[in-house]
Length: 308
Image 1 (spheres, rainbow, N blue to C red):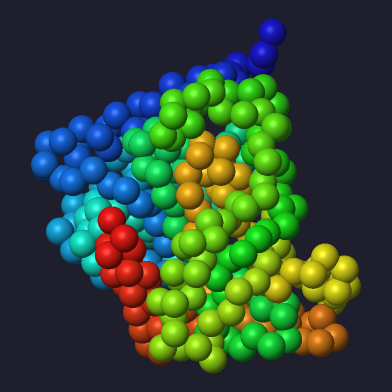
Image 2 (cartoon, rainbow, N blue to C red):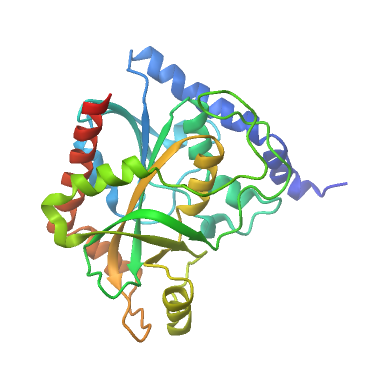
């Protein structure tokens, strides 16, 4: 028999699909009540990137705390608000803040990693076919400078794989077929959207790159040995503490994914990662970086609107 103190965790694990459905139903009711156009894109605004929310028009905001079962945020720079609206005329849901695995890694029954991807499952449950992910990351590639943007072309997942454990009964967006237990991850990031995002950043050509993102659990920043291993051994261009689990779920649920990392600190040739959370926030709060990120995202959705 499970100890009473563990019962709530067990019920969360056992009833996960139902909890996701309840959250999606709440959001769908808000969409219907306000006669919102059905969102076609979900965008997660990662560490310090909440300023992008100011570019969303016709907004309706819902605190995460009001959505049934929705994980709330605890990390500075992650407000914890869902925004319904439009970006350059494209109906979207903006997720202002995310739950990181390191915040809930202590929870049993794999609940920590499940909570970190809960929002993506909800977006898929709403039938949203596209997922735009953003994050703050350390630049392993020595050609990167602070404030640069790296379009994600692939990733290396060093977080626990979110598909571990029993196969879930979720359906895939678009065809409603059962999700796959053994999910291929080739082409995780949509090639057309990658090219569109690079085109959107042409104004900042010297500050936009395409590269591979590597995820670690955090919350410690990396040692010299780890940085050298990630860059020289794995071939990663940037390292952070999020994103890859979300992308695995999005791919598993048949969503098209695009995304970028904002390079908030650079790691030296010798592997020194001399940064802290306050310095990362300072970079993300700079007017120059906020302007660059906002312009690129708006340009992306402007170009996307032409394809609709």
